[in-house]
Image 1: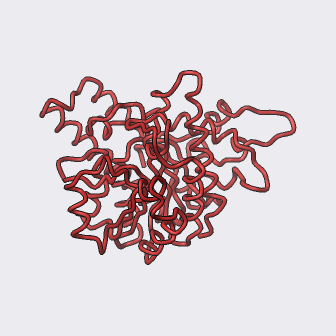
Image 2: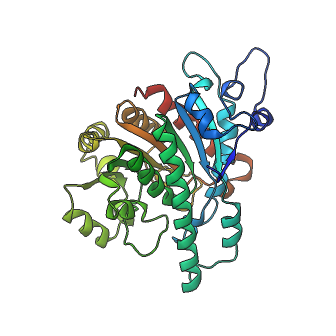
Length: 343
């Protein structure tokens, strides 16, 4: 896994705020020892969860989005390192693998313009390159019996997560996606809006449930496509649950789980579903942070939960004085997952 920049014990020490009488996650989380192969170490490591960062926003740029999601990993790992290690959640359950090395790709996109047809093609090709790296890394983590917790990056990385998991399990998997958008758009070249449709088309995604679609931002074309394949792709809308109150949040979670629970599934979280969270497609209307946390806890309880992916948060697009808050939110979501996951 040469494309990974390992996270070292020194890196952890730099971001952990030590305080007398307290034990932080940063003092207990496991990292790769110096001059040791990550995979070999992971084989014998007792930690069940593997933290992995993808600091890119190339897929977002390729989808006309605002860049900034590349900054989420740094913000998240700083917050996670300073969570209290106690009886409720222990830092030693986490192995910090590190981040995907995308520095060359990020440099390459600095001057690319999605409105230019040639540049658009280059952006999609770079996303495909990242797809291969992500799927390879996720495959290796899951093959060793570990559970990846992936911090994005754009939602284009759902494809690599699904493909890597499916290859490791030897069969297509399911996914539940807490998202304002379907990310099931046409196969027009890879970007953050079609990770699931590509995974479905290529046979890695068996069943897919989209939780909380925003009716104003889902095209007729996508709705028509889903209607034709509703035995394998289903959704509910945020508007029907939280605005018109036609559906109940808890009952909808139960229905979504019933749909995907016949096999291993990934839990995909797009932070653009939460109001006032800095991201490429920021919204003022959406589910609450508490509802999102309940969602993760509910699905993580299941033995078929194969991974957690949190994406699209963009601290660089937030208020300068409070850009640490996205990292703090991601920290809550990661620990909610660990506290209730029983596989």
